[in-house]
Image (cartoon, rainbow, N blue to C red; front, side, top):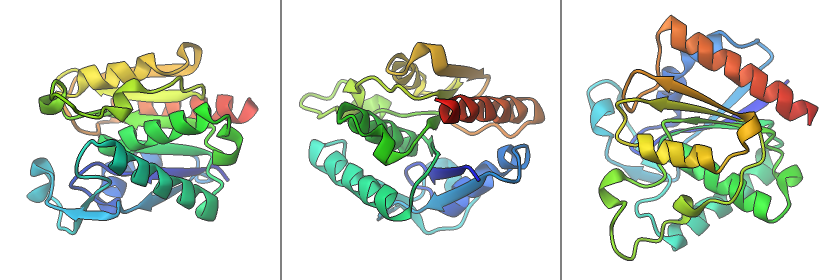
Amino acid sequence: MPRILCLHGSGSSAEILKSQITNIISLLPSTFSFDFIDAPIPCNAAPELKAVYPGPYYQFFERYSDAEMQNTIAMMEEMAEEEGPYDGVLGFSQGASVAAAFIARQGSRGSFENASFKMAIFLCAALIPPQEETASGLANTMGTLGQIDIPTVHVIGRKDLCEAQSLRLVMSCARNTAQVLIIDGGHDIPRDAFNTKRIAVAIEYALRIGLSG
């Protein structure tokens, strides 16, 4: 039974992300298991979610600093150790950046096997907020990722303000196993039949390649 760890975006929650990807999950084999977790820090709702989903809302970190990223990665390591193994990880927005930073760090230590992630799904990855990208002194831990050598799926919106960050993440991943799906939308998870099918097919392929490796 493949297990996928799911990480929501800032100002969201495990329940919200579960609702957002339910159409994708419905197209995957019933043997897939998805574990949704709440980030540790309470926060205000993301503007686009407040009127649609009730709280509470959470985020993995407040500032893009080395200290907060180290704490977040340490939390991920503890979770993988206690709740794993996981075959894959799925992250939306901030959750995607956390997943990428964690995988890259594990890879730099030569410990992908311990982390157990065999593939990753990045939905509208936001390495850093667009408005902070040129901020002086910003510790851009996630903007200087090492190579990610596991199969990946990248869902990128043409109208997403984080499109450039998502494309930067693609460049940090192994090109022969990185599937890039360009969506005609913004910073949101597609729910239409055509794109959810594309994403589901890509996830199955990435997992098949990851498990065979």
